[in-house]
Amino acid sequence: MNIETAPHSSRSHAIETHQLGFRWPKQTIPLQFPDIRLNRGEHLFLRGPSGTGKSTLLSLLAGMMLPESGSVNLLGTQLRHLKGGARDQFRADHMGVIFQQFNLVPYLSALANVTLPCRLSTRRHQQTQNTPDAAATALLSKLSIPEVLWHKPVTEMSIGQQQRVAAARALIGSPEIILADEPTSALDAENRDRFIELLLTLAHEHHSSVVFVSHDRSLAHHFHHQLSLGDES
Image (cartoon, rainbow, N blue to C red):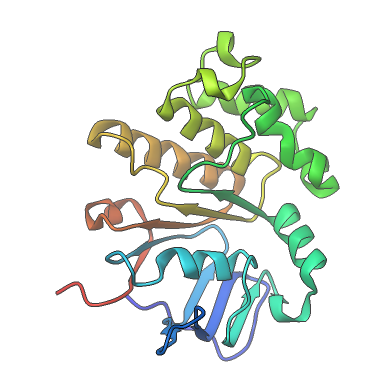
């Protein structure tokens, strides 16, 4: 289902894109993406075969890359109007990103990894209930991370536990937008569905919008909307 863009930007929308195009070096034909409009608090499932640009689109939404054409409007802010450092700060203030490889800091504890966004963003720090440590322990508890692991390096945790730490890091400080790039690819079906339901429950509590990327269309029923890239016939 294509999620159409609105004629005029509105701060009631978390994400709006219009005629996005991106070309990698030496790529002859640029990637072209459908228009998106996602309301605050709604969740979008983005699917498609490998090579259709799912991760590229997520990077454009995160402001990690700029499009060759078109626009990305997040929370009423046009990303193209922000310079590199300002885009980075906007991401730190308003977005939680769950990378496919998690991107946890290996020498930090689970607790320190989760509170990292609060050290990078005054806004996220101020939006935590009580202190960042208290907010982090509450999230780790909800995500079933044993307390005995909270102060140990994340390298001593299982893949599934690291994944939940990455989710807690994305959720701390109530960011308006959560971007998740195939975070369940290493999980079996039972743990995958449990993780998605818990992630969306926590996002609902924080009124966060979620864009969840996967090639597995069987996950789509968890989400308000779905969008397909490429030919899946």
